[in-house]
Amino acid sequence: MRASVWRRSLVPVVALFFAAVCWIAIHPFGRVKQFDPHPAGISDLTMPLEVKTLIRRSCQDCHSSQTVWPWYSYVPPASWLIERDVGRGRDHLNFSGWARYSAKEREKLLADIASVVKNHEMPLPQYELIHLDAKLSEAEIDILYQWARLERRKLKASSTSSPSPKLFLGQNSHLYITNR
Ligand code: HEC
Image (cartoon, rainbow, N blue to C red; front, side, top):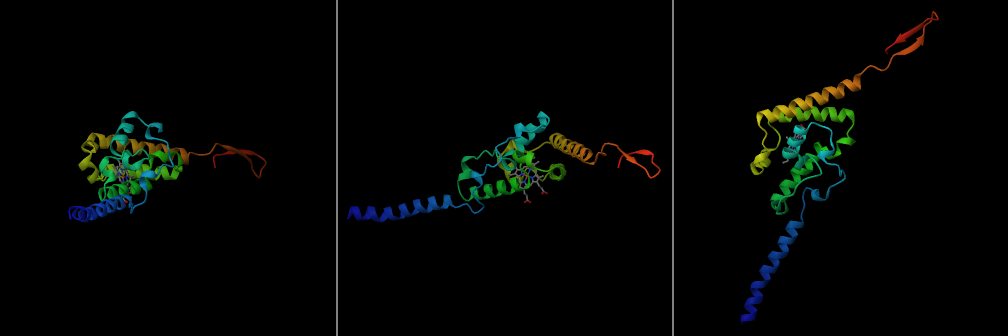
């Protein structure tokens, strides 16, 4: 009698355990945690230290391959929401893959960075809620904004700089110098 009661109460416990294991194994937004095609980190980028510090503090978890995964990022359904944000964040901008972006892509991303920080769109509010130190002060927003704009201007200048002067022979047999 006793043993059968035990067995009967054990069935739901075992079933629940397996359900939990299956639940944790489900990744509706992909296996984001296994992603690491860009081993480079933000420390490898050339940028002022204060900019690097801010990006590490407020953007790195969603916009690099160096995400720090806290314990609750393994517990569904929180894990699903976090994996979704990190996956989408990296799709838009991955600092670990910065070297692979073309000059045009970098220009666009720098413009986007300037715009999202200025408009208080990033870091995402749900992230700031948990990572209290991630919120950017107005002064910090200005540092990121000015940096992104300056970098963009530098990129633009180097891509549109006039080619070196060339010599060409005119119809009247004179040599001319042209910048075109
Ligand atoms: C909690 C994760 C998270 C954090 C932290 C975060 N982002 Fe994002 N970021 C996202 C997601 C998700 C998207 C895509 C939003 C969408 O699809 O609309 C995104 C999009 C972007 C984009 C592209 C916007 C566009 O219009 O295409 C830029 C630029 C960006 N983030 C910059 C930053 C910067 C700079 C920081 C740090 C100050 C930061 N993000 C912090 C998750 C994050």
